[in-house]
Amino acid sequence: MTAGGDEFEFLCRMGDNALVLGQRLSEWCGSAPALEEDIALANTALDLLGQAKMWLDLAAEVEDAGRTSDDLAMKRDVMDFRNLLLVERPNGDFGHTMTRQFLFDSWHVEMLKELADSKDARIAEISAKSAKEARYHVERSAETVIGLGDGTPESHSRMQTALNELWSYVGEMFHDDEVDMSMARSKLAPLPSNLRSGFDRRFRKVVEAATLIPPTGAYAHLGGKNGIRHTEHLGHILTQMQWLQRAYPESEW
Amino acid sequence: MSDNGRDSSVHERREWPLWEIFIRGMHGLNHRHVGSLHAADAEMAMKNARDVYTRRNEGVSIWVVKSRHIAASSPSDKGPFYEPSRSKAYRHPTFFDIPEEAGAM
Image (cartoon, rainbow over all chains, first blue to last red; front, side, top):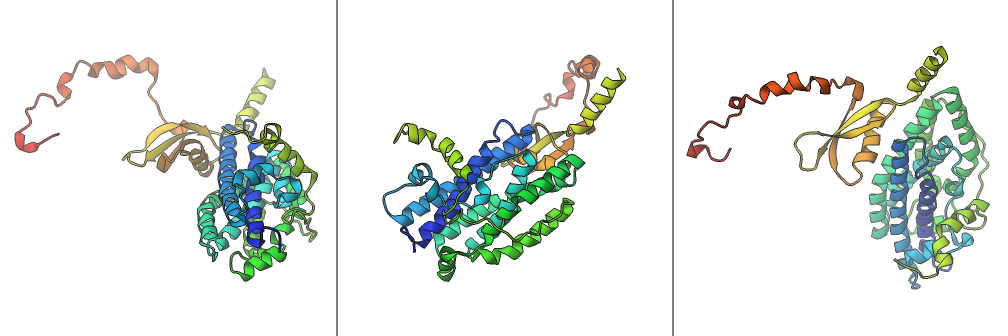
C-alpha cells in the first residue's frame, strides 16, 4: 500500500505513460521526415497529452490531498513518476520512434479495452474515450513499422536494430506487481500479464508482415512503473517539460 | 548531364506521390477538394488526410485520388474553353416565368 493508495498509484502510471510519451513525440514537431508524418505525430502527442490530463485529474481527485493534475505533471520529480521505462527511451531515428510507438500502442489498446470494463465508472469512461484514439494510433504505427520494415535494405536494418534495442523494455508492460494485483482484485484494472496474448497476436502479425525477426530474449528492464529505477533520460525530459514551473514557480497564464 | 538525369530520377522515385484530397463535411452533400498531400499508397493517403485535414472534426468521408489521375484544363486554353459561353445568356434558365404553384426554385 502506497501513500496515495493503489488506485492513485495506478492512475499515475496511466497518466505518466501518456504524459511522458506525449512529451517525447512532440520533440519531433517541426523535424519529422515528412510534413504529413510531422502533423500525424503531433496529433498523437496531443491525444496522449489529453489522456494524461484525464488520468491525472482523476489521480488528483482520488488522492484528495489538494493537488491538481498540473501539480502532478509539473511539480513531481523523477522518483515520483510512474511511467514505463519504454516511453522515456530517446526517440532515436524516425524508425526507432515508430517502433517504440508500435510496442506501446499494442499494449495500450489491450489495456484500455480491459479498463473500459473497470468497476470504477470514471476509469471506464476515460478508457472508452482513449481507446478510440489508441486504436487509430496502433493502426498508424503498425503500418509504418510494416512499411519501413518491408522497405529498403537500409530501412529494414534500422527497424530490426530498433526492435532489438527496445525489446528488453517490453516485459515491464506485462509485469504484475502489488499495485496491479490489488487493482485486479478490486476489479478496477486487468492484470498486465493477461494482456500479453492480445499483444503477442498483433505483434507477430505486424512483425511478420514487416519481414522483421522477432527478438526472443526474456530479459526485462523493470523499475519505471514503480518509480524505483528510472533511466537517466527521464530527468532530461522533465528538465525541459517542467522548465517554466521550475524557473517561475506558480506562474500561470 | 547524364549524372544529373540519374539523380533526379532516383529522387523522384524516393518522393512519395502526390494525392488530391476530397472531404465530405458534416453537413455537406458532396465531397469537396481540400488540398493535396504526399503518401506512399492510398491507405496512407487516407490516414494522412485524416491527420492533416480533419483535425477539427471537419469530415465524415474522405476520398483520395492520385494527382496524376486528374486531368485538368490548361490555363492557356482559357479563352477558347470558357469565353464562348459567356455571351450565351440564353443558356441560363432565367427567362421563364415560374408559375406560382411551383413555389420557390
